[in-house]
Length: 277
Ligand code: ATR
Figure 1 (tube, helix red, strand yellow):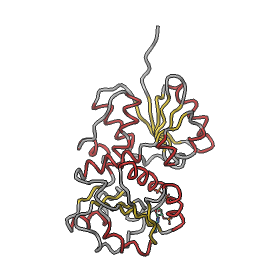
Figure 2 (cartoon, rainbow, N blue to C red):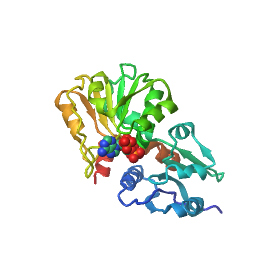
Figure 3 (cartoon, rainbow, N blue to C red):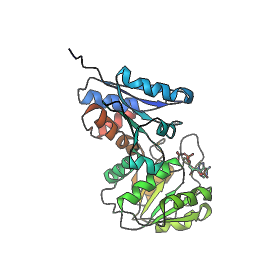
Figure 4 (cartoon, rainbow, N blue to C red):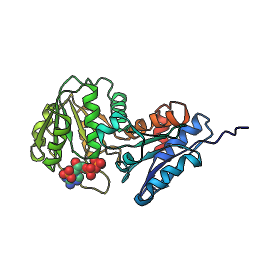
């Protein structure tokens, strides 16, 4: 007699207590009446492989992965999606019934889905995208913008080398501009994205003159604490379409939930409320 197991999933990180993902997945499990659980998993780097290999045996069908493990899981996975390879990090693991571990990265998907939600009229071909920051989050944003059809990305980063590296990896559609000159290129951006941590509660402010922003620009910030950053507040005050970063967190969770629990969840006002506690 086969006994069906209650499917488990979770988010692996260190530290992890702050993660909002359990609130979101818990909300979806309840909404769709699925008998499953999604938990915080505090896992040290030295234990990562042992823990991941043990998880399917305990009933886990998958997991999200966050700092500092997003790159290390590449060595454990049996299969890595093209988009995860391109981004150089994974955030979603699926434990397949055949025992294989699939690693994917849904951050870029989440970024574009959020943008389409918040700025349905945004056209990737309308003009350049200005991207502030060239860290890990920026890689996912740039990969997804290129995939969406943007063919001119102006990239600026405090450490210019990291932006040059990105151009080396992603090619000619990226123009690198010195951080100090960023205010001058804002006026070219039909889309402006902050991928830096500037503006986040507890971090430095984004001290950049913003008066160059076009009135018809779409402006989005990956920072979602606060929900309305100074960048978004200013953008909105001059009439730009401003898209907050919380939606990216919600949308990036969709493919994992669907793969693990068999239902594609909808990102709704209720899911936003769930994550805001
Ligand atoms: P993440 O994965 O969240 O992108 P990260 O890889 O540490 O994290 O990148 C953080 C980004 O914020 C980088 O673009 C970083 O610029 P540097 O590459 O020069 O470090 C940017 N950043 C962080 N603090 C900054 C500051 N005070 N001024 C300007 N940029 C800053």
